[in-house]
Image (tube, rainbow, N blue to C red; front, side):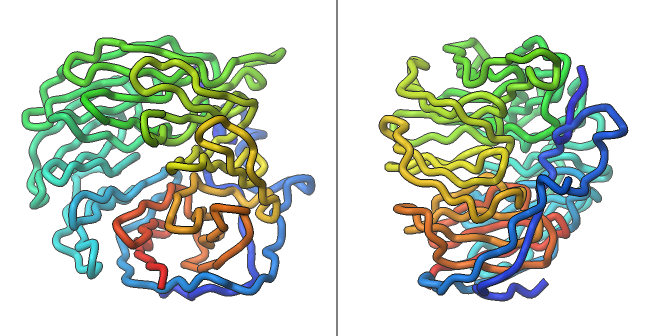
Length: 390
């Protein structure tokens, strides 16, 4: 198997720029290693607009750089947990930004964080899974066969990880003992990105290489259903990449997902029966709320579709080629980060720009996280910050 990797906050402004956040579409070809945009893929310049949504900075903290990985902060109760490539793990008060504790994991990290407020889990180099308690004290260490790029999922007394060999491993959250393992075959080429795992209602939902999404019984890993989100097709391995991207999104009784070179759609969370699906391609992921499903396609064009039936509602192509993150539904806006550290707030209803926030000029690769009335985000250079809508 090869994988392919295709500071103080300034408040809303009206003009600036970005580029493809490392969803590292990975080809093991040296010619594919350049991060410079081709003349055909130059980022669109930021457009001017009159902000109609007031966004203010609540707090910010430095948590360490992400390097070539994607680190997603975890919100659990009144805490935000964040990690960095150098091995640091931080617990921060969600209301004030005050650092409660910061520890060193003892090794470089490749993914994190997952937490239910009692267990804090991160992934170390070469497939190590590390768990800490709510005070930052080590609980256990476990090992899987290959590298982990996705944040561990914590819930139902489990820590669940997906490694790049297309295996899902579940460990007892208290002891680290392996509870179950799901193995799937791996296509010749896969995206070097961070597909998420969602734990809800005693089930584990996960996107897989090859465009499949699975639902498993949390207690024993027994498969409940498996559906195709993407269909590998094409004349070569690169054209046949069709991996599920980002975190599955649960809304109502539906779970929604999107695949690179595949489809976007929602299925019944209990049976896996398709509610709707349509052709789409995204390496970033999606977000869903009671009315809409949002996603940036592989050209960084933002789309909104009806959650009920998949009807296309709007698109905004003014951020083309700016390497957008997975979005987050936030009040009357959908928020999305770009590879130059800008957060864009678009109207949920029609996709028009509402506000823009400039951060530390480094990419926002992970989806912003909603914590009550605040939006939490982490940049590649290690700024963790909270914004609020005034």
